[in-house]
Length: 336
Image 1: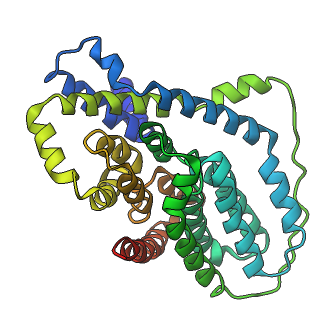
Image 2 (image 1 turned 90 degrees about the horizontal axis):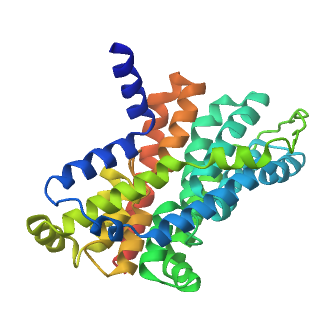
Image 3 (image 1 turned 180 degrees about the vertical axis):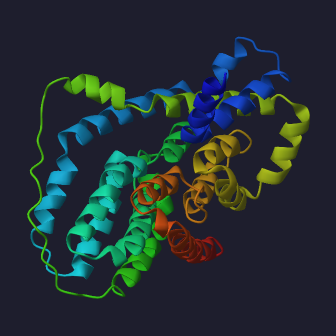
């Protein structure tokens, strides 16, 4: 019995967003009788698009294309500022195509490794904080850069061009913010040692690809669609959420993201308002802020703590301070 409880608790910790989403969806089923309508709650276009993107991402990850390019770039780096610059903007550019989560899963461990190799562990906290911010900026460039944008892209039917232009001012300001911080990093001479060669094997390639897909993320989306669908059919919650959200989409997107992260926030807000442009702005700038504002933020934190548990508090302070400053700046833009 204790073994089952321990396994359940460990699963809950590992898949906390899915677990909470599932529990809330089940609770909502007691208020709205399960029926065939549940099937229509789910935006299957979002689910299928997300699955296809995750498969493509796993293919790229297993081919190690981005990592190979970064290693070639690093051979030309001669100082600490240049090293951190490359590591940070690698996350920015890669997150455009392989999502912010996967970008950080690949390059945060790589950054820790590179900085350890040149005896500059003192730069790890700042570098990973900036990498995480960069990944959250990069995922705004295309609507396929992050799960929350995939939701909004399929729900709103906004074109790629319109999506990009809507978020362009926030992208530009965020990049300038990154550049200013990067130029504050000392430009000390370094010499990167030769790194091990990346080995590629075609054995079980497609098996690795499909096993690498985050099926719990897909199930999280399904649970959230059912939850929001049921909330829409409970008159009290429908009235309450519409009253709060309509007319305050940007603010609600930012606040909801800080508490439940921007993926659930995207599904929740789009279920009660059709002002999709405002929701897109709110959930994207809402990804900056607390550690749980974006799943990408949690990924970086977990990787760092696994390697350097003693950096935990300092990282939280640095990361949160930088994110809050950027969030305040971006909120200021929405008022212009």
